[in-house]
Amino acid sequence: MRNNYSDEDDLIDRLKSAFDSIAEKSMGEYPPEAMKPGTYVRANRLDSLGVILDAFYGDIDLDNKKIVVYTVFLLPNRSQSIHQKKNDYYVSNEYEYEITGYLMLKRMDVSNIIIRLNGGMY
Image (cartoon, rainbow, N blue to C red; front, side, top):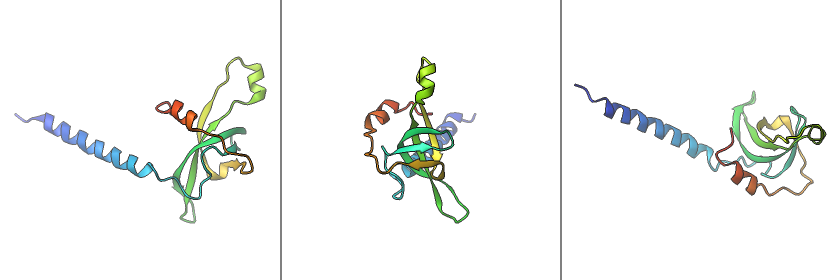
C-alpha cells in the first residue's frame, strides 16, 4: 500500500516554494525609471484620472527592454458621478505608454489607500 500523503505534501511544498520565489522577485523591485507612487496620471485608454499605487516590469518590447506596468487607482469620473448614486473606484494595470503623468503636481500620499486595498486588489 502506497502512502499518497507524502506525495501530496511534496507537491504542496514544491508549489509553495515556487510561489514564494515569484513573490520574492516581485517584492522590492520597483523599477528605478518608473514614476513614483502617488503621481497623478491620466489613463489614456480609459480616459480617466488616477494615482499610481505601484509599478513593476511586465513584458519585453521589440528592443528587448522591459516595459513598466503601473497599478493605477482610478478616480470616479465627476460627470458620471452626478448621474449615478454610487461612485465606483477602479484599480487597473496600465502599460507605461498608456498613461500620461502629471509630474508638476505634488504627489498624493497613497499609504492609506494601499493599506485599505491590501488583500482586496483583484
